[in-house]
Length: 332
Image (cartoon, rainbow, N blue to C red):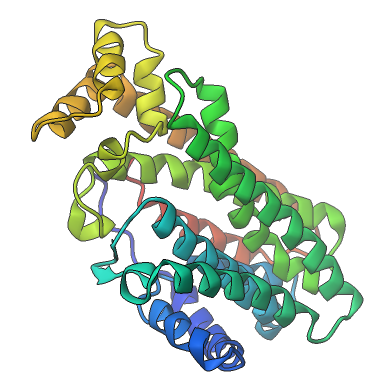
């Protein structure tokens, strides 16, 4: 474990800007959906995606407020995906609170998630200027990639063999696409040059892959107090996460044992512990840590490359770096 990283100031600055706008957007929902939506937002995470959106506007010299519509939209989309993920994974608890579907019912969870998805586009199109329409187009592409990644993740559970390339493609869609959008939407709304938007987008995509790799490590070896889920939840659900895929493709005796264990439906109390040990013996932990470092380095390279653009504010680039370090926790 690395030393604790200070909480970046952009997180509190972004909350002050974005939270009132999210509350205003939710207030427009019908009462039947506003209640579960507001309940879900009471247990929001750190707010990293809105913070990235605000920074992406500031990075090109625009006022922080320019990024607010994009920040609200990305947070609404992220939380729509969380509500639906909890239903798909049958998770009754998130961040130590009852999930929306478990509290209000599956039907309400599905429709509440749908409402947040639609609301994201309504927020951006409430003032359909050319930059906002462009932001909507980019958002639609990011959401399509996220949904495709989620679909791949579900399909992998039914397959005995998944390659690392397939697993990375899944995670680039499931996680990387939205972070790529978050790190570029503010610049889009500020009408920045496409080359700057592309550079910010690349930075976010690489951070997304590194983040998902770290999250996969936490899904197996993480402290439930930090993850908000039972220890080894990903193993219990037979997830083909990066550590598992690396171990299954390692060609080691552990790979054969893990494949046989994953094929069983009747794990006893020690099944999770046995799987965890086999994943580590097959190189899953070490390989995932190396992969996270690689994509973190690629993210930093993309960020450093932006320094060549005159319109990019160097101080904000450094804030991006600090926020990336905080998001990842550098537990790799």
